Image 1 (cartoon, rainbow, N blue to C red):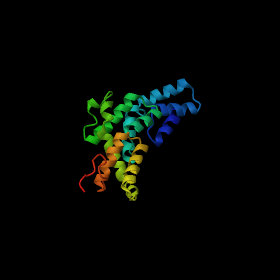
Image 2 (cartoon, rainbow, N blue to C red; image 1 turned 90 degrees about the vertical axis):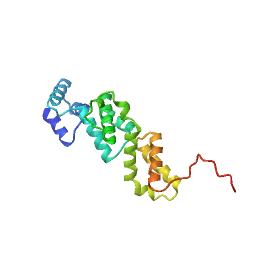
Image 3 (cartoon, one colour; image 1 turned 120 degrees about the vertical axis):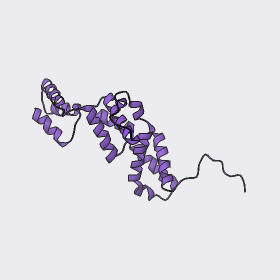
Image 4 (cartoon, rainbow, N blue to C red; image 1 turned 180 degrees about the horizontal axis):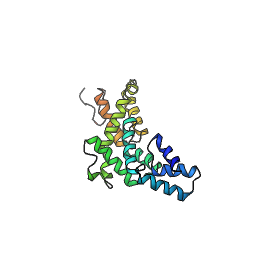
Length: 187
């Protein structure tokens, strides 16, 4: 059974819960599963905190997501809240250039992890990656709406999506007139 778990881990790192589910689905008894998980953890093959950090970094490079979407993905993989918050804190540290090994980024540092800086950096990377398709839209309002919708589908909160879309439009040299300004009353 340890060999079956090791084969499952060959393709990519997995969470402890993923390994448990795989072994349970293969028909192994609960006590054997727990002993295999304990042994793999002792050998260093299973580490949920390291898995969460690696997952967040990988997702940030390949398919940027908002903190809310990343939390949901990690929760589906069985990663508990402290490991998730540690991973998101490491993500923010990477976005701001801080040291990810800083002890302040341990459990409980989740408030910093959901900060606008790391989410906006990830949103900006996603918009840059999808810029060619977005810039094909000639109508500026529709272009902003498409950028916003792209970010919303990727799990970014509404405030971050709006700010990132506006910043991206400004950087692309296409801005909309400020809707909050009063029209000029002079004829």
